[in-house]
Amino acid sequence: MTAAGRHVLALDQGTSSSRAIVVDERATIVGSAQLELPSTFPGPGWVEMDAERIWQTQLTAARQALASAGLGVDAIAAIGITNQRETTVAWEAATGRAVAPAIVWQDRRTAERCATLRLAGHEPIVRDRTGLLLDPYFSATKMGWLLETLPDARSRALAGDLRLGTVDAWLISRLTGGATIATDVSNASRTMLLDIATRRWSDDLLDLFGVPHAALPEVRATDAGFGFATADLLGAEIPIAAVAGDQQAALFGQLCLHPGEAKNTYGTGCFLLEMVGAEPPRPPDGLLGTVAWERHEGATAAAQPSYAIEGSVFVAGSAVRWLRDGLGIIASADEVEGLAASVPDTDGVVFVPAFAGLGAPYWDPDARGTITGMTAGTSRAHLARATLEAIAHQVVDLVDVLGADGRDGIDVLRVDGGAAANDLLLQLQADLLDRPVERAASLETTALGAALLAGRAVGVWADDAELVGLVGMGRRFEPAMTATRRSAERERWRGAVARTRSSPL
Image 1 (cartoon, rainbow, N blue to C red):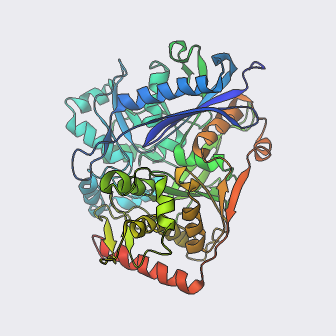
Image 2 (tube, one colour):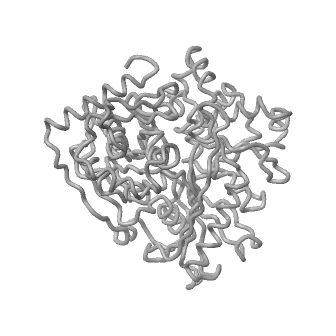
Image 3 (cartoon, one colour):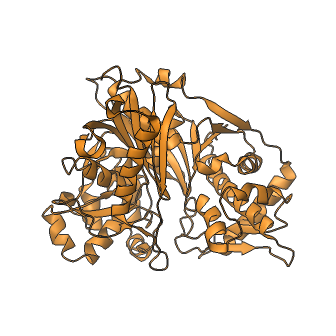
């Protein structure tokens, strides 16, 4: 690594946009770019994206971020990648061309398949091996659907001519010109195909879901190295030093490195992760066990895993986008805070945004969104406030489960993501949670986490303690709601969720 090459380029491929940032050795963002990325909805519960557009927007964002930083490629020590998880891509091994739209993590088309497997008694082995539940959220049944639907897909997959993977593997393949077909262990742990204890593909699960091993990428440690971005893309070969799923990257970006430390990211969905340490967890009912990362400490040391417990909320920021794009009651997402703050409460309105079913802790793919408590006096301001409250209530649902059954609860919740810029949302979160909420100094925590992982891998930063001295905390929100009001608000929320469910609680 040259003296000049002490910057890291982080690629952050998300559900609503492709972003890139350049981070200097002080862990400061010195360049960035972002391009919006649309989803399409070809059928009820179906969510797709153009895989080639994912690639093109991410490449363009990388180039624009470098230009924004005013840096040449020689200043970049490494690339870190983070990505929307579970979203599944199929592509030709020979050409790298995507052969179908990417099936997005929110997609529910395989709900019936999951229900059939559950009725057949397969969920216990899935839970035991993967830490997950049988749900269309995860990649395995998406892969099975592609194999059954695309012409000659299964025979081509068996021959290794067709590749199946999550977005990280797709980007790595394109960045390296097909030289590296690999995924990191954090992304692999979201497929429902990885044994999280061994951190290898499980033959039993591959057989259960009908996914050929030959079609899958190699599983590597988070900081194991993933080849080189080719010179024609960014101007020179650059090592891809580390890869992590977006929520795991945010966990690292918040420096939740010790058991009991937790963060919540407000993005398209909401994702709460609590670090639990070096052993695979036994998560509480309704929550998930997942690999946080697997990292090397020293050049000769074996990679060591860290695990987390996770709660996944499917609809958070996308509910605000629905107010903008679906109802037209705001012109931009930034308007929601002022509109919601213009009324003191929701006047009894409760919004449960189950557009893609309900995730944790309910796991009800057939639930659909509801709005209760409306009267002739209900205004768009009440609905805007109910939307922010819905996001906060869903996070409280997760924290309540984490603290159940005698487990130590979360004392302070660290938060990040685009919607964390909303002061009213975070105050509502602290009020309903009855715990302090600490906002990260930089809301680009997901991309920052990928940069920190990559920089640590190539020696930009010597150890994690150095990072702790560089990454700061922003504003802290203290709870101010009375216990009586909090109890009433939570009871009203639980009643609305019960009406939303496809089956009784």
